[in-house]
Length: 113
Image (cartoon, rainbow, N blue to C red; front, side, top):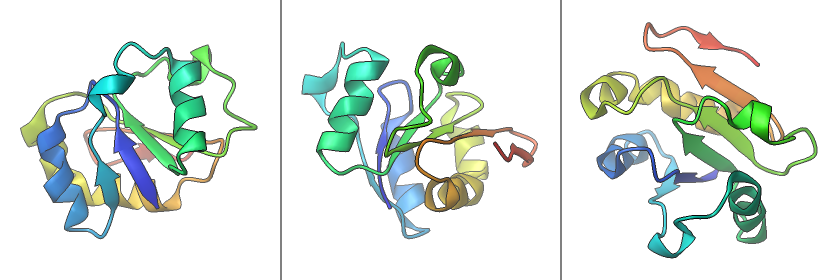
């Protein structure tokens, strides 16, 4: 599963996710300013499988059902808190299906849809 961190996610989370076997890349500088639809188009064009974001509104702003990428929504941007659930984030990256959104919660329960 090839994933990219949205620009609102701490880049320092990448090594923690790679420890769980996830292929995660940081948000490229030249993508800054892309709206969600354009960003999802770019991800699909480049063969990414998953977007990791803190944008809790993305599923309401973009029709995802026919997309070839999955979206994992993190509960917050705090690096220490995200590191504490890195295993759950990695599981969400590898198990969320294209066109679906997985909302993670900090108390280690996640929304299955």
